[in-house]
Each structure stands twice: as C-alpha cells, then as structure tokens.
Image 1 (cartoon, rainbow, N blue to C red):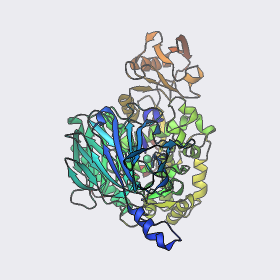
Image 2: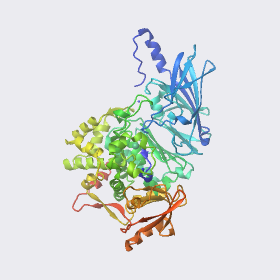
Image 3: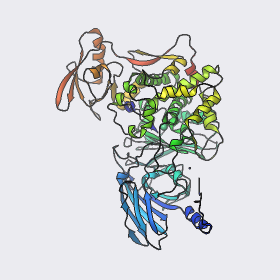
Image 4: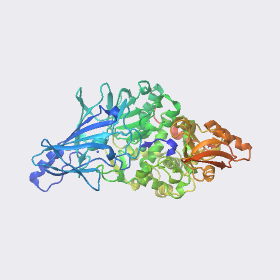
Length: 640
Ligand SMILES: [Zn+2]
C-alpha cells in the first residue's frame, strides 16, 4: 500500500485434507475441487451498491461462512463488515436462517438441512461515499473498483489457497473493464472468469468504467504489462506520451534490477476521480491505484504521485513474492503481524522513489527536493522520543486509520518515509565498503529475483534479510538495522544522506516538492518556521489548523490542530498574507499575531519568530562524490 502523502500522515492449490479413512479420500478431494460460484453485479455501482450471490458446495450440518477481515496489503483487520447487508442463505429451495457469532462479528453460522448439496448466499455491499471508520469509497458515478473481498464469503477453517471460486461479473451497459483475472467468456450475459483460488480472486481486483484507456507498457514482450486508466471524463483518462515512456522505462528498470518476474502478466489499474480516496494497493499481478481526476494533466498533482506506480509495482517482488512470515496468513481471518513493515513497505518506499527517478519521472534535482522534504520532517518531529520506528510498524493496524492531527507527537505510518533514509543508508554503505562494485540492487536481485514464473509466496524472517545482506557485503547488519528501527533519536537517521554526498540545509526558497504538495492539497506548510499546517480558505476544512508540530514556536505559543485561522497581524488571513507576515517579522521585534477560533471562542496566539521562512533542500557536501546521482541513473537501456 502507499498512503497519500497528505500532511505526511502524509497463493497450494487443491491440497486434499489428510484423512485416515482411506475410503473417504476420494469424496473429500471431490468436495475440495468443487468451486464456489460467485456472481457479482456492478450495474448499480453509480448508486454505490454491489450485489453478490454465491453458491457453496456443502454437506448437511453446521456451516459457518466468513467475511474477509484481514485484507492483504492493508495490514489491518478492516474488512468493512458494517456495510454488508442483505445477507440471506437458501438451501433446498427454502431460506436457511443464520446467526452471527457473538464474538466474531465476521462469522455467519447456520445449519445446512438434510439432503442439501449446495447453499446459496446473497449479500449487498453498500459503498461509502466518503472515507470514514469503515471501508473506503470504491465507486463514482462513472467508474468502479471491485476488490472481490468486498463481496465474498468463504467457509470457516479453510485456507484461501484451497477454496476455489468461479466468478461471473456484470457491469453497467457501455462500461469497459480491466483485471489481471483471466477471462474465459464475455457476452451480454456478463463476464466469466477462470476458476481460481480465493487468494488469487482477492489478489485480482477489477477496474470498470465509462471512460477507459489501455496502454501497452512493454510492446512485443512477454510477460505483457498494461496500464488501464478509468476516469470520470474521457479527457482525464488519457495519459501523456512522456508518462507512457516513463512507465515503459519503469518496466525495463525492474527487469534490469531483479532479473526475474513473478507474474504471468501485469496490469496497472489506475482510477482517476475526485470521489475515491488517493491510495495504492499492491497485488501479485496488478495494482489498484486511485488518484485525483486531473493527476495525469496537472504537474503539481502528478509530482505528488510520481512514485505511486513504481511503489506498487515493486511490491510484486517485495511484499507479494517475498513476504515477511508474519504477514503470510492462511486465510483472511488470521491476524497479521506487521513489525517487519520497515522491509515490506520501507524498502518498497525507497525503491519506489529511486525507480521513479531511474524511469525519468524525477530529474535528480527533483528527487533531491523530495528527499530533502522527507528527511527534514522526520528529523523535526519529536514523536520518536517515545515511539520508535518498529512500533509504528507493529501498530500499523491502528495507525492507518489515525487522524492527521497530532501526528508530530503520535507518529504515523513512518516506516514508509523513514525507511527511505534507512535503506539509503544501507545502499550507500554497501557502495562505500565495496568501492562502488556492489549496491542494494545486488541485494534485491539476490533476495527478490530467483526464477521467473507464476505468482507464489516465499516468506522470510529478519534473519533471512540479514543473511542476504551479508551475502552482498559482510557487516554487522543486525546492529545496523535494529539500531535504526529501534532508535529514539535525537533526529532521523541521516547518515545515508551524507554518505550519498549531500546534506540537509534550510533557506527561504520554497522546496519544489513541498510547493507541489501545497498546490495539490490546498494547504500551507510552515513546519520549519512557525511550525504548523493550515488548510486554504474556501475549500475542504477551510482555515483549519491541520497540525501544530509539537515543540514548534506555534505550538509553544498555544496553537493546536483543529483551531481555525482567522487573521494574521490583524488582517484577514490568506496564504500570501501569512507568508508575508513571516518575512516581515525578520525586520521587526514584534511577535506574529494569529487570531484563531477555538470552538466558538476567539483568541490571539503570539509567536515570537524572526528568522523568516525556512524550507529544506539538499546541498552538495564539498569534495564528496555524488553517490545519490549514481543511484538514480537508469540501469536499463532507454526505451523508445
Ligand atoms: Zn506499499
């Protein structure tokens, strides 16, 4: 998964049950191979309702059907059970009453009547229109994403690799669709898919919409790579030629990096709409990417999503093929252990960024601005004094849903951005110790490469990671990594920035990446001067203080998230008025006065700050080689 950077809150098939009763082996095996027939109807997706009907092969007696709870890649028990409605079971032509388990609300229990060989189950999934405590929006008036876990039950005490599903899908008239799931038949009656395991089904979402485009990202090559866009308008579904060139280079760069691919074909699904929440979710053979409608045609928004596709694509190797043992679970009810997300998400974050540069998306100066903004905020926040990076990973399941307010003290899912610094540290260290002969690329090739072929999972432990690193360069990698993920500071791990030939510096010129984030997300970020974020007037959360960084001049002066900014130095506030006041204060000994609204009360917050605007950049270390520049160079021949 890749979180939106908003405020930096930013498959064992057919294995038979071992049975001592020789005579019944054939019967058990026969039942195991009978697939669940699943029919999903998206024709009311614009009204935010998905209909599903399942037919389960059953035997008479007690039966419990489960709704998926722990969703791969989401690292949390967040299957949106609250919006599962219309649940009815039928057998032998009659309704079968169910009862919910009183402890596990994801479990529906019933008694299959005598003589029944199948049980039919129905459900209607009600899609939220806004992100809330349960589920996320997945459809707009013009497009829909179908993660199959939203509309499927499966029998208790089964492995998702072993339960087979034959799915059929109906979409609104005139809509197109794309998915990595192999299609066997397409007609006016619907789309029929190959029978696959429940694991593969959930791993293969569908993107459908009125306005869709498909681009070939590896023409004439096998395996094939496709980009499928769906937008709320035809124009916004069109990618620019330079974007296609960049993503073709991305495919080539992963070939040069890993030397192997663990999928039969790869489908980037890209939904462009204001009505879903920006996000990316990785799968073995596809990725479910959701961005703002104008992303492909607005340079600022595109800048904030520069590493989205490279991040999700890298996950096919790191997270899907190779996966921490604690995240490889037999089904969707078994809890996941996420303490190694600093590898799963962290290494992916690092390479998502690096590959976006190697593919030509970020020029070196652009990537340096991105890296400076990441290093600076992590270095600035005091949350690490009580919570180390590893705990942000262990706590992933509660932090994904956390508010942005208070993040400077709570910390958020920092194992993404901070691991960028840690893996840069490791990469530059390997380069230094081997005189530039080896790099973290060699680790990726050794650890994530292997043989090309169909999707499979090869789990790993932290010891496996250490062994593989030692295979590249002998070093005390345990100490190196554990010191960093368990550190309480002070400050972020910046050794890699220095070893790459650069250092963090501040001046009064706005950071280019920050400038794009501010424009795309309608916020002003004064983190390194006054120390707060505020939403633009007029839009969503107008005038609201999104965060007052703990320990900053603004926070010390009494500003806190949730207050509304009214005026600056007696004048109605605007982004320009605020910035001008910060610049003016350099020439004055008077404090900057913010008039703020706290509930229905007004108060003045006086901030004694006279150092002007401050923004982070990377400055070349005198006499040092530009190792970062080497890391960013394309490793594959330029595609045409
Ligand atoms: Zn991710």
